[in-house]
Length: 174
Image (cartoon, rainbow, N blue to C red):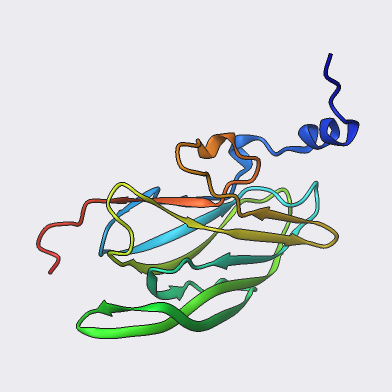
């Protein structure tokens, strides 16, 4: 007979419900297109207010611009990309790597944190782009950073990163 360690059992009880994950809306965007993604935060950390939301921008997502939120400070972390990308006829080799909103969102409230970005052809149609999100509260943090392995369902993860599915490029865009 196998026994489950108590610490693990306690962790399982704390695992957030599926609806509590940080999701991105829309759930899909065409390759090569500019999209506006809204990250939905539906709860704090065990009753605590969310004080900071950090979003990592994955390699291959360029021309990122966050939407400012009234009452929240916004920090944009930039850096060099691993490779260069073409964007509107220009070569882009650096840009936004992380967005950090700092403010207060009480546990009882839902809010969205949005940004605009362009999906490069680094992502094949049918793939999913993951945006790891760290939600910081006064004494705790929720790290929505898990990316499913090949063939694994994101719903099986405790704290999946927000996923944006890449669809076939739109026609007449170029």
